[in-house]
Amino acid sequence: MEVASVQNGGSIMWFFRDKGFDDKSINKMFKKCKRLEGVQKERASENWSYLNSIGIQERKLPSIVSRCPKILALGLNEKIVPMVECLATLGTKRCEVASVIARFPQIVSHSVEEKLCPLLAFFQALGVPEKQLRKMILLNPRLISYSIESKLTEIVNFLATLGLTRDGMIGKVLAKYPFIMGYSVDKRLRPTSEFLKSIGLSETDLQRVTMNFPEVLSRDVSKVLRPSFAYLQRSGFGDRQIAAMVTGYPLILIKSIKNSLAPRIRFLVDVMGRQTDEVANYPDFFQHGLKKRIELRHLLLKEKGVNCSLREMLDCNQKKFLLKFGLFKGHA
Image 1 (cartoon, rainbow, N blue to C red):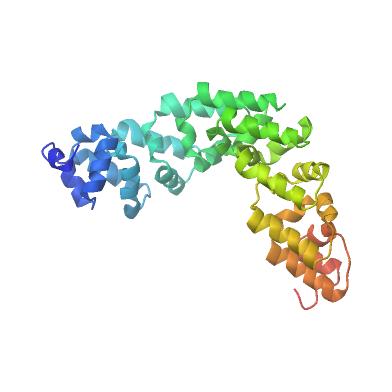
Image 2: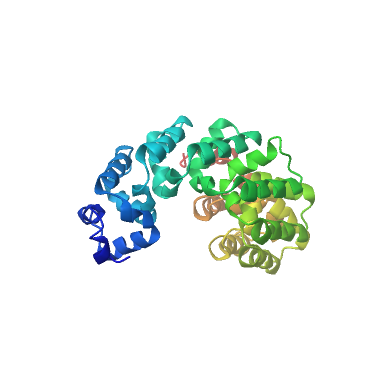
């Protein structure tokens, strides 16, 4: 519906004009939400003011309304206020509620009784502690839009096939990485788990990866995991070594080759003069900062003429490192 025809329909146009929206933006909002045609300026203004009152900055509201114009058509006391108050009861600070709505404004269009309460009950039944429920909603408010029956239950059933139990283990995975519930089991999660098994991870290894680093399961095999695996092979690591490294530090497969893996391996071999076998025994090498930890500590040890393993060099905080090798004086 074009702006010219909307102008005859009601005062909502003058509201948009007053808030600084241009004709193109207004047209897009009317196409996105037909309900706007019947919304009066008073309701839109009331909803706008309420959102501003809970901590959403005035300058952010145009973007929020553009993404979810329906938010101006919702009944304030029927939809928006109940959702805000329910989120607040989770122990969420007012500013955090505002942040959730700013990132996913569609959350206020869902029913507390029909969507949020069943969702919370679903997670509690899986052993997710109440304090973790707050973090899950904060991290991924889009959860409320997922169907429990066709989406979330499928994710839970898939995790159960990996050997995770429903008496707390699956709940911990979902709480640790709530974004996993946004992925397709057939298109992403299952292919990734099959790939991990194909490179040598046992069922127990896969369970450990899923429990500690569930984000690895959400990565694309062909675009991320396989290229990283191939790079490690080209770098001289054997398949068994790679499987052991992935089990020890699964994030190695989702680190950037260009910005993370390659620079560290080059420094290890070309500058430190070490063998890649050392990394196979200490895959956590890849989690340490190259400039701030690896290069700096190597330089200090070289100046001191100290030889040690990568684990001895890196697996401690800075104070312990300096004390361990007698480097504290002048470097505190």
